[in-house]
Amino acid sequence: MSRRRRLLLWLQFGVAAIALAAVAALLDWPAAAAVWAAADLAWLAAAVLLSLAGFVPAALRWTRLLATVHLHYPFLAAYRAYLVGVFCGLAMPGVIAGDAARIWLCTREAGAPLALATSTVVAERVLGVAALLSILALGIGSVGGGAAAGIPGWLPAVGVLFVAALLALPRCLHWLDRRWAAPAAATRSLPAALLGRLRPAIGALRGIGVTDLLLALLLSIAFQLIDIVVVHTIGRALAIDLGLPILLLTMPLVYLATVLPLSPGGLGIREGTMAFVLAQSGIGSSAAALLALTVFLNRVLVGAAGGLAWLASGGGLPHNGGAPSGAGSEAVASAHNPPATRDHQPLGRPGD
Image (tube, rainbow, N blue to C red):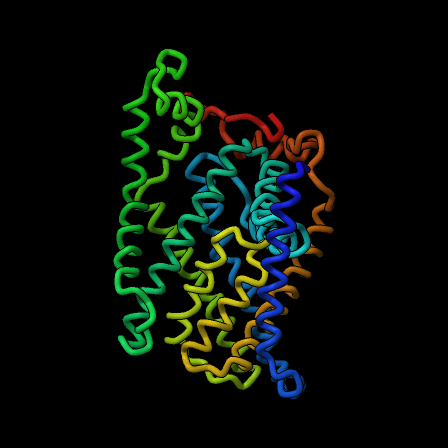
């Protein structure tokens, strides 16, 4: 690891520590201990089960996106990869450790080219932002102008434009593929040179149609809504009065804040933003901080399940360049992933 990268990680951990310390400072610890002692364990268990169920639409979304680029990845394997991703996001430094773990598992188990597996995960992230903006617009409409007074009025419009741009993406990819059809070496144009390197990925991703994107967007919305219901369930367990309309307004802001690479995996930023926005919505600052920390503990429990899934998959870190190894992976790749055509040339295995 370079010195610059090491310094960046230390800065991110510093931001996480400061944010968590700020949340802890808001707590009335004796009152929090009493609330935790009286917490309804049935509701807390339901929150963990809902969190695990929330990865069902996420795994369906990923397998669907992989199918559009002619890559087969079984649903159960994708679901397990999501759980492993949560564990890696908690246990390993870095902003994208969870995504990197999912990509590696996909390349190892399904023989997926690294660039195409990465492209589908990036597409998931973009769809996630579009889903959050859609839910935020729904939240603003459901609670009325009073509760949404602190939110810029143009934000829902940005969400609509973002979704429209996302649905126009297939046509844009087709246009780019035709516009810079010549090899990059034959021209000095910088855009053509960049697109020459990205051409295989563009050729594969242009197979994603509007219907596929709409389905993936609906699955993204379902995934985020389940996560919001999890927060509501934890609130019920702690006897904190939370209305779902308020959560539809506040939680998208919390999740959007974690998109910024300010801390490892959004640690501290998620909890600090949650405590702040809930306090602005009329929840006591101590109760908001207690809820934020309990949601984090719920995530740790889900991450522990991911750790068990990680051990069940053999554990370890990528080796031999991270390329898929063993006869099993080769069999999956040959049986389910069709040979690449001219428009679907692999960009190379991990480590190339």
